Image 1 (cartoon, rainbow, N blue to C red):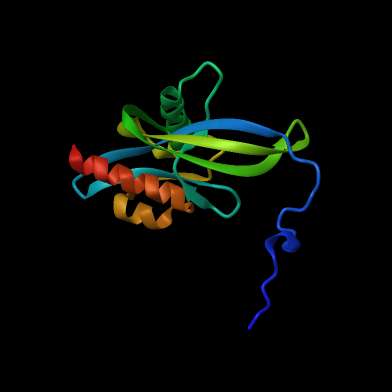
Image 2 (cartoon, rainbow, N blue to C red; image 1 turned 60 degrees about the horizontal axis):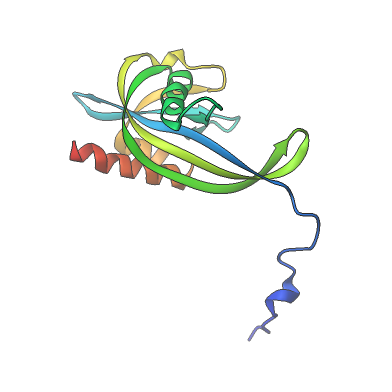
Length: 162
């Protein structure tokens, strides 16, 4: 039987200078359209590993999360949308840099349900490798982050209620 080691002896949180913490707020959306084949959502591919995710970005200082969601979907997915309702806010922590110094970010991402109005996913901006329409069920398997899969599941429930 393995010997139990008291938690304080494991040094899980080594002493050292604490990193400054900054709050960061983003917004994005589940942009959807209904076709003869069913409901599709707009996904974007970013990064060198071509990670699939929902379009989202930082809330500007003079912007509401709702306005940011519509703007970011327009920029990253190339499509114009209409805000339907809030889906969910996810929250997490990560370490990054700000002003050339290492900091901890406390991140909040507000997600909204957005109905497609016009545009083409090929018109996405430079930050995105690819944007495309994906059947709702397939999108659930493509998203890289569990939290975004949960958001998509909540969006699917809202769409069934409409």
